Image (cartoon, rainbow, N blue to C red; front, side, top):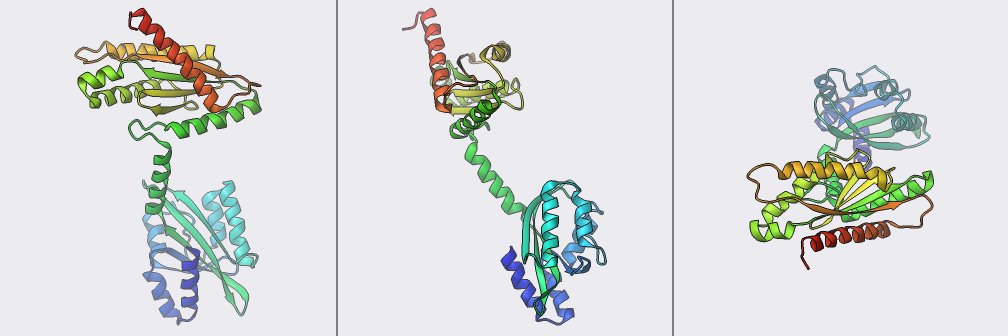
Length: 313
C-alpha cells in the first residue's frame, strides 16, 4: 500500500544507513532504492531472494548498479499497460508525480502470483533525489477477490453463468450485434423429466442430470458462445453471430450426444429436453428479457406438443 510505503520511507530517512538497511531487510515486500536516474543503489533481502529463486526470469528485480527503468522495460516489452507504468515511474523520478502503483500478475517458476508495484519519490530539501520501489505479494487477497467475483456470476452447482450474469451477457451482445449488424440466437432448454427423476430417485440424481446435460452441451458450443442456468432445470444458450437456421446443427449435435448417453446400459433414467429459439436480427427492437421470453414461449410450445403426442393432458 502506498500509505504504508510512505511511512516506511519517512522512518528510513531518520535512521543511520546501517540501521536503515536492517529495517529494509526485515520487511517482506521486495524493496529497492533508486537514485534520481533510476539506478538501483540498494535492495533488501526479499528482493535478492526473489530474483535468485527465479533464476533471472523476473527481470524487473534487477540488481544493485542496474537501471531499474531499463530492467522494467526489458521485462515487459511492448505491453501497453506496462508501457504506461514505465512512463509513470519516470514521472516519479522527474518530480512530475509523487507516487504510483499498479497491480499485476506474474508466473515466477511454475507459480501464479499477484503483486502490487508501488513507487514513491525520495526528496532531499524539496528536490527529488530518487525513489523507493516495492513489489508486495498480494496473491492471497487477489485470489480471494477473484473468487468472490467469480461466485457472484456463477451457478454453484454447474459452474456456468447464473441468471443475472447470463442476462447481462445477452444485453451486452445485443448492443454489439446492433452496432456491427450481426445476428445472435438464444436457445431456451428445459429438461423434460427432471421432476420424475427427483420424485423417484431423489434430488441428488436430479442434480446429476443437470450437471451431465451442462457438460454435454458445453462440449458442442464454441468458445465465443455462453451458457447460463436460469434456475431449476432451465438452461439458456447464447449463440453469437448465428441465425436460427445456423443454430440447428448445434441442436442436432446436442440431441445426438444426449441420445448416446441414454443408450448406456444400467442407467436409471433417460435424459430428454424441450427447447425454444429466438433470434435477434440487426435493426430489431428487442431487449435481453424480451428475447428470453420469446425463446421460453417457443420451448413451452414444444413441451406441450410432446405431452399431447403422448396423450398427457
